[in-house]
Figure 1 (cartoon, rainbow, N blue to C red):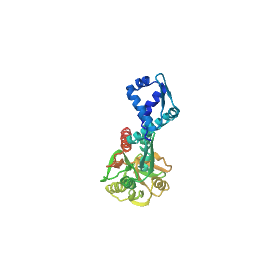
Figure 2 (cartoon, one colour):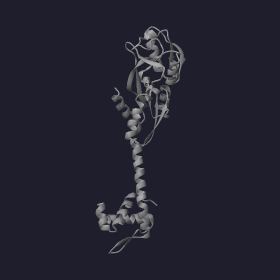
Figure 3 (cartoon, rainbow, N blue to C red):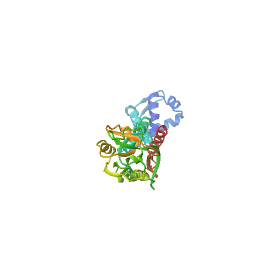
Length: 298
């Protein structure tokens, strides 16, 4: 049985009015066209819905049963249509997001809050992931969009800079230089360094190494940490010093000091990444929100 929605809507109006002429006026159709819709509906259902005489129109038992069920049918049909439209518009479904810790401690919460306020039916699934892993995951369609740090161009991906902050020195809180307002990079030449493993973010790693070499030394790396909490913990323990984006000062870890570097320090960028071939409305909306939040944070 094929049940079309337009005749069903017309049926409800006729069943409410119990008068074909008044129902036709409400529906802005001719009475003959309305009668044809009802006959078509009766043929599809296989039952007579109205008992009609020259003086009155009444619902048959089949009509009464349909009148009870019809509003629920229309409601579910309308809801299904709306869900499909929302999915097409990118305001429902699931958006898989990757983010480096730098982003999670700075602009990522603002971006996700903006998305949730505007599109509460769009579910956001966020995974903390280093830059190199995100680039692979976005390319392989395991992530829809990512927030990465200092990534190089990729043939299948689009990268757009959002915000940038300077590289700063991170020292143990009891380090002799920790009380200064700023520090020269040369003053750290003899210090042991705590670093990110290069495979987790080769572009950022190379920026740090090049910056040190431009100031006359290669850092003596004594420890590496796969996440920022581990690295800051190693610094707090006195294992060494580190160079990190200023974003991480937001973590407010006890036992470490963040000091501006004298002169021109490298700016470390946060970027949004997505597939060049992706036509998803949800991804477009995320990128749009990221741009807006980045502009506010300039």
